[in-house]
Length: 245
Image (cartoon, rainbow, N blue to C red; front, top):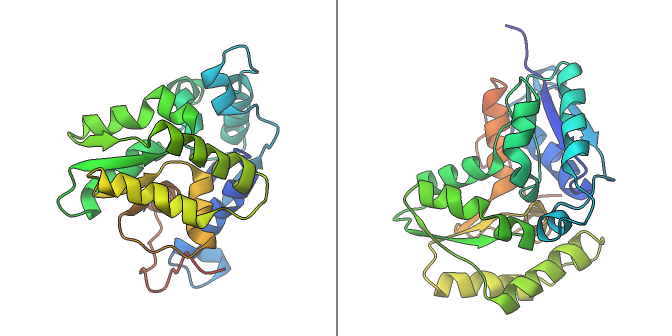
């Protein structure tokens, strides 16, 4: 059987793209180099900011650049495309219409995984960029699954954006105490699970080796879906310690 090639539309952001590729490798049950998934990675860091455009349409539109990159991946022989950026999925429908190969949807994969793995799940807390929150993308998927959701308060959302943009994206150390306080506030609001709906938050989980079972990491969910799509097996959790450097 011919092996499938995974196309990674990256650079949104660059650190998250590298982390995603690392996850796919660590989570694949492979004993040799040849058993790993072939990947074509476009780490296109100059794609205009997704949140900036969603909140203000006078800002540069990232869609034409992302569509161009998706078509490049298709021409390069990829069998499917993944975008390791939750906010970019605001443009998912338009991007999927631009190519013939499937684009795996990180939002769908994350909510489905939470529903499958979190006992007695009724309400999901959403930690994401202002752009993702404003788009209502996660809210729509969560409600489609018959679940409720909670968002951070206005103050906590502003603090989360500071952590994402001024700390993780800027290459600075994240304020882990503030991050965990925001998570705790959502749990107190009745959330059995809290989705890390921004790939920079997945980087925080890795950097600080967070293992709280209520944290549902969208990046890991996308990596799992990618491995399965490409016909490979997942490593057992004890073997694939994705929180180690």
